[in-house]
Length: 174
Image 1: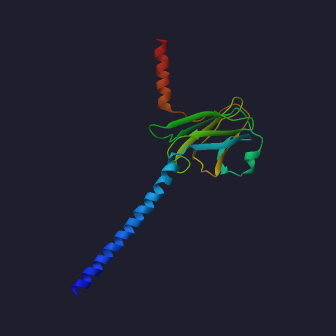
Image 2: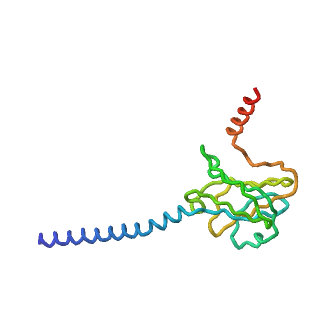
């Protein structure tokens, strides 16, 4: 009777070992896919059009508004994690004649993980558009709407950086 219990215990151990080995093999098989997805360059894409009020929204890639005539030479800037100690800035990039833009963001997990960003669009003679949002996924684009007029609502800036720059300018004049 004791021999039977030992054999059944051994078979359970072997069964658990096989199950554990299968899980490890499966996880190791997925590892290259995860690494490739994390290391590939994310590309932020979108269109800038003219409208009544400035705004930036995330839309599906097949949204018909992305095909409207766009505004050229609009500067697009992106700041990842703007509220952290070391935010990362990308851009500016300019829109083409159709108002389309594309900006490579070589940040691990961009477009996949929920990364807070500050996106802004600027052009002389137009009001700035800016918004805090998560980077859109692969099947999404940015639709940026800018309006003619004086820029009365510029995007927020880094107060510490502005103070340091002002101090440097004051020191250079002395």
